Length: 42
Image (cartoon, rainbow, N blue to C red; front, side):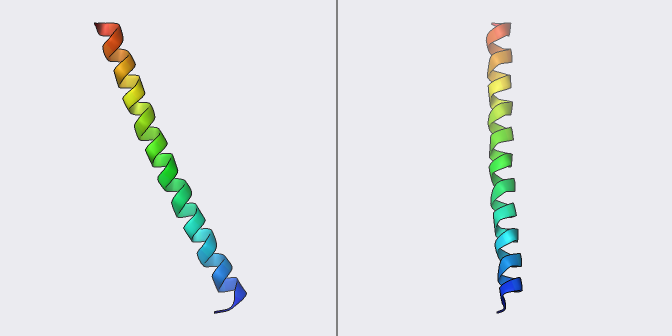
């Protein structure tokens, strides 16, 4: 493998990890908003 191919694969891997982390953060924020809404209703 040449350096260009390794750099491309590393970039794709880093982007995949970043997107995965964002998805978990959004999911957690949704739960927080729902819990707050439920607390306000009660």
